[in-house]
Length: 295
Image (cartoon, rainbow, N blue to C red; front, side, top):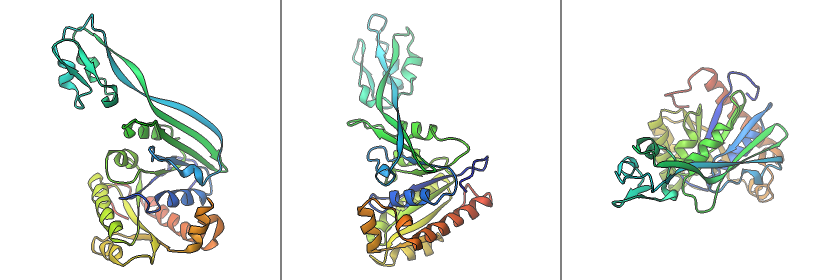
């Protein structure tokens, strides 16, 4: 893996809750790639992969959504625009429609159904996509503007930036809602990061239901192993889910983490651990079992 070609792989890394070590896994996995790799930080509300990668050559692209603008002179108050909008972003009170740009998802439906063509579209900025690089890693970061509630369109913009013939790692937002689905959809494998605690198990079970519903291959990574109990292991055994690797609750990892140093750079044994993870991913994808299969 890591070489350019038609067999490029997209690996998404997700978790049912925040704080399990999802980004830690993502940046360490990217670091051990032999060839070019793209790390996409899709946690657009709180991106932090850049804290571990000293990148340079930053380029920024503004991402906007088309929102409606009504010409009251042409509008006949028919109300078709408000009927088609599923998000109440445009409503009619007898005369010209009232537009709520913050609720608009940019589908363009209101523009299409307007008989007198009284609705046009203008761009509304929702965030930026930043691109930078260090060594063989290209970091693509989505950064949602403050006060904007629409993460999925920005996540799609991040994914549209990814080169087709270079392997990519996507660091998804935490949870199981729409932003997560937007990030992991159409990836080849989902790595679910959890921790051996009751909270970790509860949210892992939700994440497992999500990826199974999407029909995506997945496996589990247990972080801070030894800090809790064995309920996560028992759950994985019962559900016939393979635990790909277990990362110990090692004080040295935390010490290096606090300094922004990756464990694969500081501790040789963890480089070997992540290399074993890469091999397991490579073996499974090499068999062509990319859809409707579990690791």
